[in-house]
Length: 333
Image: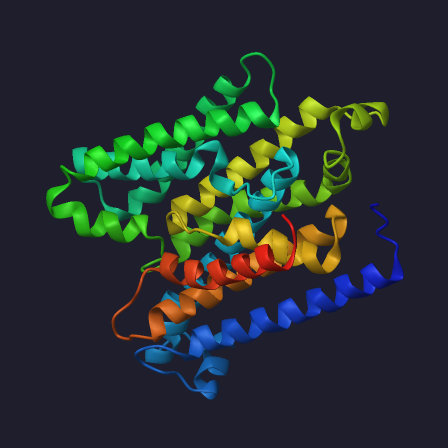
């Protein structure tokens, strides 16, 4: 079932990874070139080669490159978080927000903006705290009577409903902050810079590394609990660990980009459709697919109606929605 040494699957994994890397590199190049002020290829080579003066260098180093890298990390984090949640809960419709992280982060950002009107630079930190707090509450509720995928899903639904209701109530009193809050709640990478890359980088790299290192154990969680225990699996401990990794990845991603939808839902399905269910093969490809979806969506969001910019969440829904509908029509989920 999880034979990673299958020549066909190994070849598909390598080929798929190379194609995703090529597409991601092309998207990155387009992200540096395109914009209200286009940049030529020669200027990009000089800027990336070390030149730090001039309009082209400023656009590349201070605006476009950190934004692309932030999108790459956000997409990879959300996609892997979705893969972990779908595997742990054995629910193909599970998303990174199933633990209440997304709703908790949104509530925290709305709350501090309405009540304290903090500067925009502080919002990612508050979003991270809010998402983590909501996930902890979900864990506490799910642990009552035994930590199971069903209890986790039900607790996450309850926490998400409460946090969403509170966020909506605070939005009614947001006043002058309403436009900024609605823009953040739509998800996007507008204004994201190196500080945001530094914020998400340790969370993303640590979470992705732990997920990859635990891929063998994640494979066992796809089996029935009794079978996994028979094979020596610490089912509850592993489940809690992988959910914690998914929470950390999701909280960091939402803190930087807001509640970007569909990535954690669609990317795992696309990869599993091609590579099967072996986590050792699918996890790296899922990370690359998520990064590609977010960076491509962000490129469209800031270039199609330039100089105006559309929310990233619109494009991830437009990209992810039809893909997910196609998956539903093409196979039984």
